[in-house]
Length: 287
Image 1 (cartoon, rainbow, N blue to C red):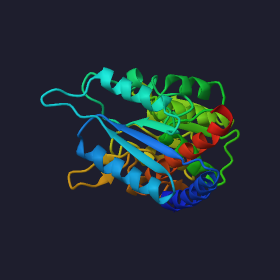
Image 2: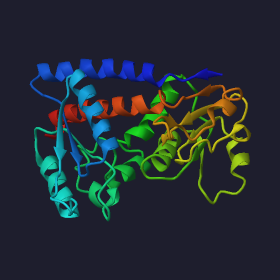
Image 3: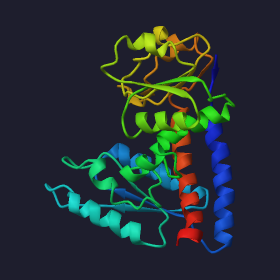
């Protein structure tokens, strides 16, 4: 078994992004990402800081828009929508993301539609998912796109391969399945009501675990030699992270396996930056 090194893939992506950002800056276009943060969640704050640091290192301006509300009130739907509309209309901003978690009673499906599809660099607008389903050019959610990026960087033949995606969220499972389908893989999507889940997974040449349950995918889920992409990021009591795959059990069986951390996560951040640069490039044709 060999680990798929997400950090190495992310490093290569960031180098490509930096070169493209420098070219755009030379043309007078400053790639700019806006991150709307509607909560005071500490984990969110750490992640947003990491995005800003990575963006600025690669020549992308990063605007963090903190939405604050006086206690005990939380930021409301109207305030989030107004900010997303403002940023979508701002010609100086090329990419817009609304960071989760959202305030109680607000869902990403409610607010995502207010992000312009041309600036929807994390695929939150349902129009982006629809375009992905139709095989049209769009921005897929960065985590789902990271799954495909890792597979492509491994030079795997996806055409005709049997792919199983465990999880059907609109953030990872569904878009990852669509991306694989667009590569002519034969795709099965599994979920909590799938009968004999382990048996279905054992058929996969490519297995994508995106359920949010620590260690759920064990040895009996994996065909010998299969490529396993672990999207899970489950916090542990000691402050660490583990994936949806039982790494120690699966490693002797899989042909390739992404570790957690160091697999999908770094590539997700790098792709947010690449999407922003692509969106900035599109302003030359779409305005």
